[in-house]
Image (cartoon, rainbow, N blue to C red; front, side):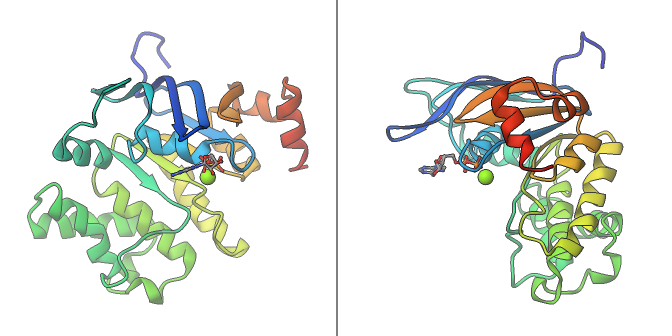
Length: 254
Ligand code: ADP
Ligand code: MG
């Protein structure tokens, strides 16, 4: 990556508490355009909260969140941007959750068309063409007319990825996208994520798939108790962690 181009995602001095519980403490994170960062750490370390702060599903107490050209600074008294700006910002920051959150009453195709039609006001024929192309891209061209209840977990998650991509986001965020899947279905979802990364998508991936993180991510960030304990190139960090806490955490996966 050229050192001169600004990062696609820049999180600076982010802090977040829920009541008296401090969940993120002065977290900074930068992802260059096309970069893939894997966020790892024990349960409760703040990974989901950090990811949710990046697309403002959770409002930080202080710090700055920048994605592409949109920057928001938080501090005492700051308010969220308006509903429209927020919807646009979130659409530009595609999020994929552990539990797919598809609309059960809509087909796969309708799920993928929904955002472009309602948020972006795209005409239906264009939204449908875009949705069908994305379903093909995630290997589900033949499932367009199926309702989520007729799809496997891996297929549902691939629809959820297509739905996020339909908004043509600049970045994609994955929160344990494969954790709820039966083991035999994990590979098809990781395959789609791997292809997206190879396509140049800027991504932050919360995952317990350490081998996948090592292979696909450029950098790995280890979070513990809301603090970035260690960060570095994926292979170096996973193969030879420096901090004792990172070493102890990664030892579970061997
Ligand atoms: P991780 O994803 O690493 O498991 P989370 O970000 O989900 O961690 O949670 C970090 C801590 O913040 C946990 O102790 C959790 O209970 C707490 N937390 C997360 N969301 C909320 C919330 N909306 N209200 C109160 N506490 C929360
Ligand atoms: Mg989590």
